[in-house]
Length: 303
Image (cartoon, rainbow, N blue to C red; front, side):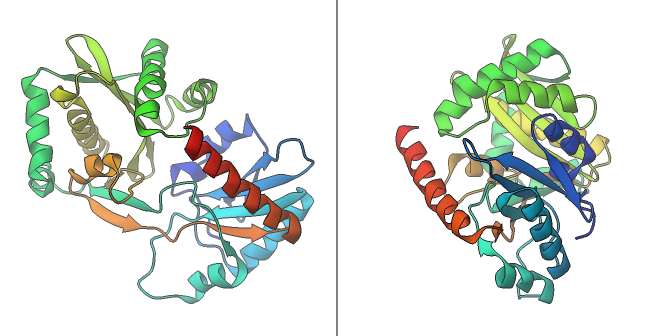
């Protein structure tokens, strides 16, 4: 694997943050995060948003997995689905098994090399309309590094967005540690206020030539002022001032409300290759996948 530092989740900043919570390794420059399987001596590895592995990489990962007493290693490359199979892509199908996607397989990429006028022209008419609605209502957008503003972001996430979308979010302490580790480095907080109240907040990662929509949160009230649309538009404009070439809206799924929100910005829908598992202990891996599927079914029922 080439050094997998193109995506924020392969950056040294992300490695620094994750190493405070769990063991991490690098294989040919690509980050591997290890999670202990609760109540067992076993672990499971994860390669987040890295490059496509080669056959040599797979062999090195297998050796490392045995050293780490791992059940398996999940590999989720930040690589676009090819129109036809390539020799390197075939490594995934020959050596690995399909895994559960931790991130959505599709994403939406907004081209920031275009002028603001051209980006607006490429938007869905409803997107341009919503921006004007927010401006008419006097929604104000600002950035912040203040701890109290980040706490408001958490309140919005866990009191509004997580409940509304029924998402499975890390706890508040995870996000606080993330913020303390990554602020002033690659994490940037943006807020939208209406009548002096913060009603929408987005956490953005800036890395390499791009910005990434890591987390978004909004209040259950004041939907009519369309603050989320204006906020994301102002973030895109900020990205241009930072000389970034693209804005990865990070995650799309057909028919979902969060995807329709992102689609109004008119970016390119990109499908990634998906998630693949490298079993280290075959029978434990089979058991792990069965338990994993049962767990997610239960979570969907009780959420």
